[in-house]
Length: 149
Image (tube, rainbow, N blue to C red):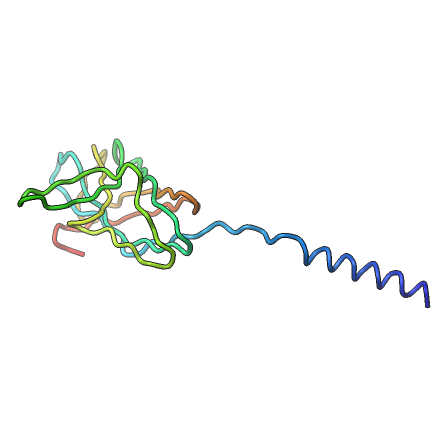
């Protein structure tokens, strides 16, 4: 009886230790939906891209990269006395947990500056979105004609 009791006791202790181990940390996730870039005239110095981001837990979009342009930035647009003002969001864009954040024309958006490709309908722009906590997300974004969604 004692010989059977010790192995059972050892198995129980190992099972308890395994349950007490801290959980493995899973990287927070951000989903991307409805991504598109607006077509621009040939030789345009920049173009706009739009999408909706939803973070599982609070996060922040901190940067965007693309091989299709000299650089890409996170921007906001506002009207000031009838004048459109665009500025770079140097600190990134907050993503509240579970809330969809739409980057759209006339508001927050992504700018591809110094495009290396023609931003014509049917083309696509590869973008890598970098977040404060979540792993990067790389997407191929279709270019659509101005006014088209």
